[in-house]
Structures are given as structure tokens and as C-alpha cells.
Amino acid sequence: MTATGSGGLPIALLRRIAAQPAAVPAGERCEMCGEPIPEAHQHVVDVESHAMLCTCRPCYLLFTDSTAHLRFRSVPDRYFSFPDFELGPGQWDELEIPVGLAFFFRSSKLDRTVAFYPGPAGATESELPLDAWGAVLARNPALAVAAPDTEALLIRGPGPDRPQADCHLVPVDACYELVGQLRRVWRGFDGGQEARDQLAAFFESVSRRSKPARAEFRGSFADGPAGGPQ
Image (cartoon, rainbow, N blue to C red):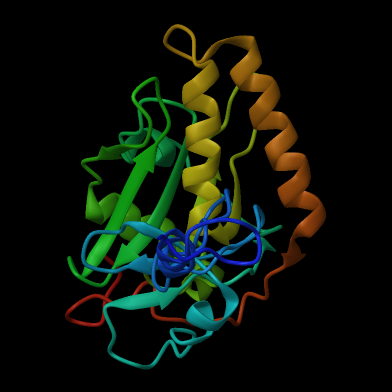
């Protein structure tokens, strides 16, 4: 005779049910510890691969010390504008960016600045001429406030509706999010009207969140192997 529980089910079956792990709730999970995370969450960057990891708050806080020599770094939430930012005649063209927008950040692994621009394939790395980039930094010393790996300088070059270039410091994950949004709607060479509308909305949000950077800021963004801009 098979033993049964109070609900009429065999005890052996009840034991198997009790031993099964609980169902995993749907939604995103921390890529470090596996805990559930909300849709709005923070990121940690792998400085070796530049990959972004979605993290819970406790895991994020483990990597907030920017002076520690760790493989992972937490992406801060700083937004700055540079009201005095300027490019000299032809400087945007000298950066060899084929579209009117790019983001720049210093890679600890490569020990130099790298540049990416949006397109139909997502974020595309540019062969950045470091001498030309050094000239931009020399003309705009406040840009040195950007932290390596985790913060980017998002620059829009001059265009028909914008006679002067502009620049914002933003979290690097915001740049990748923008590029992903543009990729989904990109049409033709310049992205098309829907991409331009999304870009305008993004910069409106960035402008609201940004505070002006001070010219006396200095950081590690421009530090090259010999102390010069790279």
C-alpha cells in the first residue's frame, strides 16, 4: 500500500515536489550574482573587453573605487556639459568620423583613447588619429574630467542645423544604449528621420541632466604614457 499525505498525494511525490527548486521569476537578473534586478538598473564595465554587465546595487557598489586595480569598474551617473567647447577649423574632419556623432573614452587596457560612432551595424570603432584628438584636448582642457573606461565624451560635429560642435560627458553605458536605439531605426547613410528624432530626444534628456563642467577640472582621461594627450 502506498503511503499518502493529508492531501491524498503519495508521500514520495510530495517529497520530490519539495526537493525541486523554486521557479525563477521572469525578468532581468544580475550578471554577477544572479539576483533579480529591476528594468532600471546600473552597470559594471569589464575593462578588458569593454562589455557591460547588468548588476544589482550590492554588486555595483563592489567596484565603485576608481583607484582600485580591478578588472571591473562601476559606471557612474555623471552628466556634464561643456559650454566653452570648441573645435578649430577642420578639427572635426581631422578626427575622421564619417557621421556627425561619436563618443570617445580612454581604454585602460589599450592605454589610449578610442572612438565609436553609430550606424546600421551598431557601435563602430573609428581609427582615431591620436594627434588630432590630442589637439582637441589641448583646445578644451576641461574634457580631462572624464574617468577612463566608464565615462565618455559624446561629441556632435557641426552641421546644417548646428554651426558649432557640442560635447557632453555621459556614462558610457548611455552611449551604447543610444547606439542600440539608433541601430533599430537606422535608414540609409545618415540614419533617416526617425533616427534623427531619437537623437534629438536623447540630447534633450542629456541637456536636462547635465551641469556645466569647470575649465579647471583635471582627470586621467588625457594622460598618455609620457604624460601627453592620447
